[in-house]
Length: 580
Ligand code: ZN
Ligand code: ZN
Image 1 (spheres, rainbow, N blue to C red):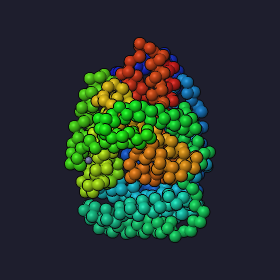
Image 2 (cartoon, rainbow, N blue to C red):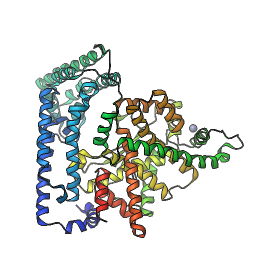
Image 3 (cartoon, helix red, strand yellow):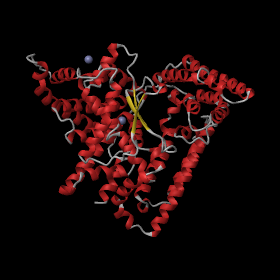
């Protein structure tokens, strides 16, 4: 309790003007809505047992829902009943926390209807069908004894064959890209039913009969998965659906996923203007740095080429594969001390970030990521997972380290850790809302991390022309993610044009651009979250600065903004502006 005292006090001061004017009637309404939310979450887990296990709610671990027509009916009935319940509440009279929770629940419910009735990815995305991850969670989880977990595992196995039979019935004309992904991911993950499972079962205290029954059922499950992969490989698909979503569905999915005050068309224009602005700024810096890095060499006439050559030269300043992790570890306390010294925002020292080598089951993914405790496991550590470069070829390691050179590595740490994702997370845990933990807005979360990068540099962090040039390059990545996603899904952008955008205009390595192309063929809208959230947060700050003039206080702005939790920026904005 003691740990939470200071931040809670700070937050209640910020919203006290609202609280004091609340009538008893409104308080009763909030209490009623709190109760409604509890019921909503309980029912949500009951009909989505896989999602529940994923967030650490293990009551329904032994259940696997079969994705057939009756399951769809259950989902739609749930959604309609909940939308009906929401009508009892006048959002204007709810507390700030409940206002945003209300909006987020409503959006989730409407998004489910959109997904079932219009998006219909259950027909064209075979990779939506994969049970391996949820079984691995149960097998590797530390939340209960091995025997309890293995019994849940065993019970859950029962429906695996029916699950994949239902999947085959749902799939109509899948995209080639999602079909290949489904085959690779299902086969890749299926080791959870033999190689990973067998030794664990043998070690357990289950009876011999239970062990045999479990391993027999696992064999049947494994076969269902291999059959599914074979079925995907062998079923003729003469007119596969395009992986491009198309403008109409895209616009709707954008609204549900991002929940922005911008439409997809609007943010597309903002991103293109921003790209041009970044190129202008980068040219000024690169031109200034030319002699320092390129001596008397003749300057290329093409501006983008000139920028690229200077970036390539600066990128040679980087750490070694051996020191990669310790370098990151060293920077976290430095960043924390800087944020404190500059009075940018309060960071709760009682929940330190633990830097660790990427655990084996995550290996091979991104260079660095944050693992946060789920809503049912709040006291667990927050980890900063750092990928090891051990075993990489010298060429691959060199290319990676140039990308994450001495400048970019610091910006990465700002983004992932301080004052980016990790810091935002600590704040969101202080204004506890189960709704925001499970339905948290990705554009707000990513937008904050991207905003934090800019804010740190503006405050003078490691100020130099090189730092700014590299920051702009990094910011171009988020900007071009948005341009790429919208162009590919709604404007028929070719692969060649996409790679050109990423390598020539965003100065990315070929390998990185290839990876991004693959990602844009498999996901829709998510790539827009970084730039859209960033733009909204930055604009909100500038608007408040203008309004408040001398009274504007950056630290207060940050703390107040974060106190609303991971809600969509447009709702936070409404609340922050209305209180002026
Ligand atoms: Zn090198
Ligand atoms: Zn991020």
